[in-house]
Length: 399
Image (cartoon, rainbow, N blue to C red; front, side):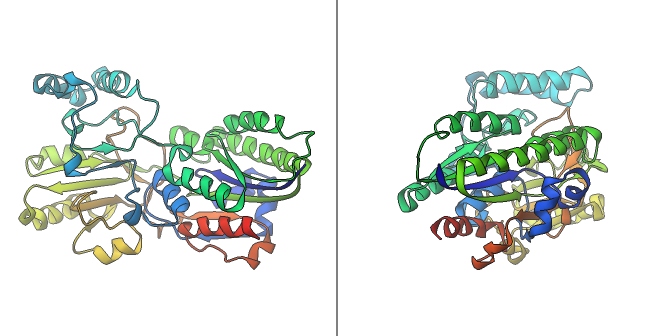
């Protein structure tokens, strides 16, 4: 039997307000103790990197799974995508109605991204931007270099083996079956740290919406499985330390903003280049003296549907939330949608808008992170920000 099992269960996009409605085991855990954590703007890639590294994105350069670094401007992965004539032909498909949009995404996803298992898939990106945007060659948490580093720290400093189980609930359960084969029935006096990553709610929420029948069915399945895991852990170890973490909530989209069409309609594409994400758009200016006029234009056209950040003028606000990138890695201007509004089409897809959204500014409840854990952990230094979780976990296994 093991001495201790430390189980850090990361449930992507679990909103606190739904726990008491769609679950029983999670609701009981939440009645014991739950804390909300300060978060960063953006999505799970940046949140995971911040949590595992114990540093903000502006320190790690890990905020989005893509980044603009001028000195790294690259050629495309496949040679014929560099051909200007082919780019023009393919670009026409992107802006045509109907099935041509699907042809465009298919032409990028299959030959360009389909052969690569790791990294983010930007199947809606304009072909002329492929050379400008550098994507990290990993995407999931177990591929993240900060995850590999904390695993080494657990082993080398505390002699604790750690395992990643996931990405989906079923993957986590299957991985656990394999792991327990080497544990059950053996006298192994040691500690294990388990990272369980469950992204089912996030996927269902994006595709079908939050609070739908399909979404609640998924939450109930996760809840029942967590009870099963809790009981199993107690059979395998003398002591079980269970922590439930949610990186953010989610809301249903109430408006889609076609910001690319806005740029084209007013002929701004000759003055800027940009990256359109689901709730964030980054703008790089060829001529900085045009910044003021472009700022006024965006505020006039999009009004209270967005927040606009000037990298220079809003430096203190961006630094506070850990996303100040002074070398223009994410543009000269950042446009953040207000709650439950999304940019579409975007560089991920031009055919499938997301029904459920997150990635808003941290002062929105939807962007709130939380952690559920036993109250006796108050003897430790309780985290207040997601970047504090790393030290919390290290202190937990060292006590």
